[in-house]
Length: 350
Image 1 (cartoon, rainbow, N blue to C red):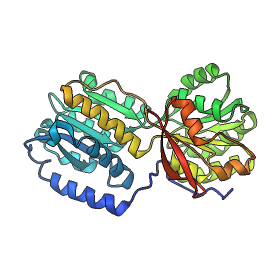
Image 2 (image 1 turned 60 degrees about the horizontal axis):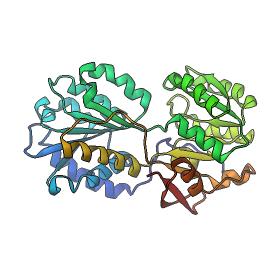
Image 3 (image 1 turned 180 degrees about the vertical axis):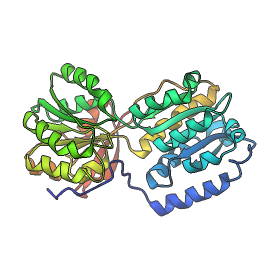
């Protein structure tokens, strides 16, 4: 195994220069529209920042809406930092606002609370727990206008993956931080339903991570990582993965960044998949001028295996296509390099 190195938990590989050029063109075209309503402007994309991952999702949504309204649908884009200066009349002119990332959702919902009838707002790339905490600040009267596609995978899908990929591993260790602590009861229920033994450690500060890991490891056959900024971040990933590797304990991650850093498996939705689902929801709403659906987990997802880590741990896992098919029942495949630089098939749920 190559020693794991720090990596962004949500890293999404893109051609940054190409995305930047496209984004800047869209951004400059939007500058005036945030100051005054624009005729025919129906959809606004709000990005947390200009990083490549957010731009990739935005481009996918834009592409998915190209044929809407006979190709005459106007889609604008802005970064979250611009929302504080946006004229409320400009926001009110949009039929739909799509936020990409947590900061974009926070800024947009905060700005919309000043509107008597805010536009329907769909949040992408947002953790479920964070979204649920934002709703009270948006106002209960506006809940029916706000929806989301969560960035995290449903726990049932993650437990299904463990049973299919590592059926001999029955003891699951999890470390929860402040952002994921509310998942503990659901974790326990899913573990029981999948006949798995669960060991949970809780931390409230980064200094407690190593001690929590030492408490979890002896009682676990694998470590399941959940999105929590205190547990998994650029400063903690290296030490966590190195410790588990020395103990020969496989780690199940939730992003491509964690897989490349040394996790055995990762289950996540790519920028393409998040944008695709967001575009589908937007098209349906715009076509019937209706309401948004209930907040939902990703229906499109990717399963990746770190082949070099599996070899180092002496584990023989099913192929990625087979794992994805077992979780979804049907697979559309796409190609991407695995952690060792060789082609690997990604499962794309229907």
